[in-house]
Length: 264
Image (cartoon, rainbow, N blue to C red; front, side, top):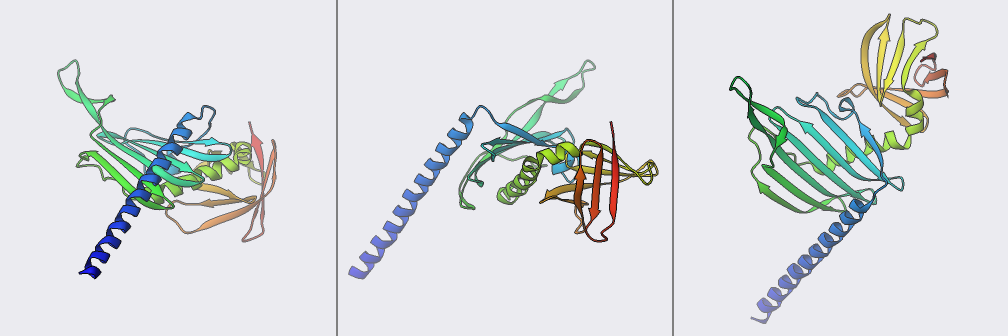
């Protein structure tokens, strides 16, 4: 009997300690979110839809990252599907995801002059919302209200997605001077019918004056990495020179140099 009572007390204490620890974690997360929301001088960086979507959204998409003291604090993403806006806000503390707010907001309907009902993309209402709290890479608690839309897949892997978007934003933010210098059109000096255009972190290739393909890019320690979405191949170029007039890239596989002239 004593052994059973002792076991019960041990289990009860474990659950009590866990509950107390969880409450403390949630309280800390809420305090951290309040601090982040109090910042008034964010450095805001954005990703174009092509930079963070594998396919274009029905009614537009945007993703903004908010930096304070050179660290990402918040990501706000909006994606317009066929029937609803999906709004997701990610909070970070010491480079770790701490909170995600995910909302499905269906479009309201309106009647046009011909009496036909149609979607009003400017007016929405909240049908489903989830609030997920994270600590050290683990989900602590998830709260849900409402019911998700039947034609929209509810997002679950917030941690993996948040880390991926953080990497894309950080790469753009910490290499902002290089990306800023790359923007625009560059003519290949050995054949001016060939040229490249940088828009954001996307590189567009043109051969004989015609569009050939586009590649996503990232910059790692002075190396420009270019790759196709959903492809394992990566083309690496050492940035030998970059100024207002000349861009020189060295292919790290073939050691061939490519020299481009800036076109205003």
